[in-house]
Length: 370
Picture 1: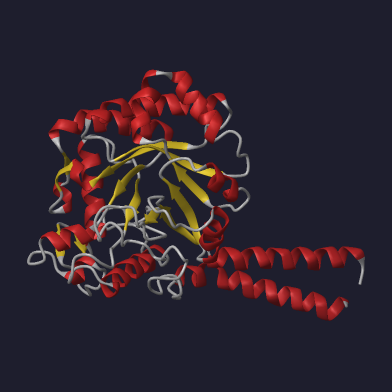
Picture 2: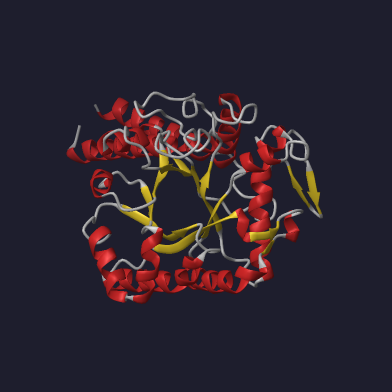
């Protein structure tokens, strides 16, 4: 076999290996990594588990240097943010923002930082008014160090909406509309998403007579809500479209809405919390994100990057419900079989023909030239 043929075969095998790895990746799925526990695995173990379950991203609520080090070279997309209590200083002192970026972003050249989240559900509080300037300072600091492609955003909750039903009536609360408008203007100018926390569990648990379990957990087989030309079989899509409608009302309908947190607890509020309900919700959402229905009825062609909450149960949180959103216990044993299911028709449709083609070509070369 000639050297050129050897090179070609090796190249084909390499491409095949890369495609096989990509096939197993869930490109719109991430998982949050909470740190409110005194018994969590080591950073290396945590990163290894993320790679094992084949998700695309990890969300960190604050910089954890040893964990960031372990993320180098993994290709995991990283969402990271400063502590909420640092936002005022980040807004008032550019040098503080520059130092934050130089300390926690710049040194880690092989970490795929993709989003910096300035504030987690702070818009309605005293800190909220500092968020836009803090975002601007962080973005300017990233540009100064030559890393301007990182998106700078913030995270809001469904409490930011004055109305969400039906989804087309979605509108931001009057008290924060001006602030939200300033924020999304920044997002629009940088092609960055607005991030939201979405928890159908709380809607269901607070009003089970009006919100069915099937509608909350992706198990409805027919539309539950019809809103003009849009039909909804689950609260998740309806909530996101309420945000989309609210953005349209402030003339920023082009801003994408991504999900920074969503999940379902397994304990603490029977019968609403259970392994069965958590599995149904999270697996239903995972199936949606990894098949051909990644958007919402209002935005069907806009995939929604979603971070599930969360990787591990956190024993230092208050209340049994808040401690019980994890997919894994701190000893890394699964709470239930969330990540061992084969739901990705997207993977099959997107890569199977390429893989079979590469296998056939490789086999032919091996047959004729070896």
